[in-house]
Amino acid sequence: MRRISMATRNELLRAIVLRYRDGTRGERSRMLDEFTALTGYHRKHAMRRLQGQAPRECSRERPERRRYGPAMCKTLIVFWEASDRICGKRLKPLLPILVASMEHHGHLVLDASVREELLQMSAATIDRTLREVRDRANGLSGRRRLKPMGIRASVPIRTFNDWNDPAPGFCEADLVAHSGPVTNGSFIQTLVLTDIATGWTECAPLIVREQTVLTEVLKTMRKVMPFPLLGFDTDNDTVFMNETVRDYCSAESIVFTRCRPYRKNDQAWVEQKNGAIVRRIVGYRRYEGFKAAKALAQLYASVRLFVNFFQPSFKLAGKERHGARVRKRYHPPATPFQRLLADPRTSETTRRQLQLLAKDIDPVRLLQDIRARQEELVTMADQRSSHPVGAESGEIAPTIDQFLAGLRTAWKTGNVRPTSRPKPTLKRERRRPDPLVKVTETLRLWFTAEPNQTARQLLQRLQDDQPGVYPDELLRTLQRRVKIWRHYAASQLVVGWTPNFPETVPA
Image 1 (cartoon, one colour):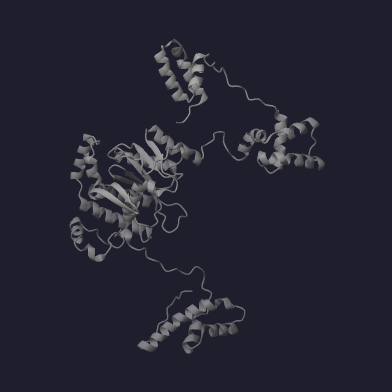
Image 2 (spheres, one colour):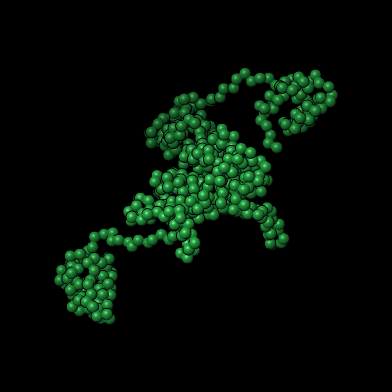
């Protein structure tokens, strides 16, 4: 058990010392047991404390004892700056050398008493004296913020074995990055909440990865959840491990916990949903900007209903280890909606609201809306158009009957989710001016007259014709061009038609 502070022990002693003296033998024994259990004192020492005088109240804090005055502090600052602002532990052994050197070169003259006091100053005193100066020089305000390590120390750890069948409302949270193949710049991230008891999953986009935005999105997600958020378990990412999220959970009476560093299995519930829901629905493309965030929010509005009401999932019931083999037992597959109704801890009001909502949900219409939103996202990511699909091409979105009819043969086309289609690779265009643009026609005529010429021979002929203008570094560029011309010339020989050389050729 964590020991309480000395001030708390003294307060506890003052509270029970009079009752201990006036109590009977049995009452004193019980009070002594409780006092030793709380304070950690030995029983004999606790008896002496309770039988003696009560600790006196501290009238005021003891003033800080200062041996060195302002003049000494200003002198120390000069040497600290002259040492390039090193720490006290390094400045202490340097001071004798630095004082002698600066006096030798005439930078300052110290009294014998000041020099003696300065050299006697300890490393801890040097750091304490320079604390305010160092903080101001480093741009730190008076208020000291807790470092991420300090925040993590204040958030308890919860492993995968510590859940023990929690009530609906204890959720694991994680972020899924939609950065595409590169992580530079600003991109959208998805906040995923998964309930441990039922598997109920909520998703919402974050336009930027920032703690204030995360708490605002979390407030919005809590409004649509069918149960109150009781627990918030995250990883050790700094977007979660900060004062903003910690204070928000404390103010809203939400149990804030974290997993162990580098232990992904501690968050197995939400990690499974990251792939089975977010990546399966959204894919791996890069999404950025307000328009993509709005499209993702509309997509998740349909996904939450489709997944939670019409997507059964397995839930682990237990596992047994036999040597190197682990046997896992699962509950029968059920949707999060069914598990929430079957849970005896769910209120009747919540059950009625969910049952009414389930009657009005059309799964086919939801799936049609999901496909349309996916197509819109893919169009944005691939930079084909900034408008919804079909706006420029004149295509008309299928009706619900047409979409339902298409489900009968959709299996023949393979994967029908637009976000699962491979991203088209665009041909790289020229990035610098064509160095042969003025002589391309001349080179083409030379090649047409003598198709057996090599690119090196053509370049040598060009250099002889215009010396000092076209260097040898253009050989590779001309070789690629001659390769294309040879392709058209070969087509003429095989097929028997006159080639039309392209107007523009790649570099």
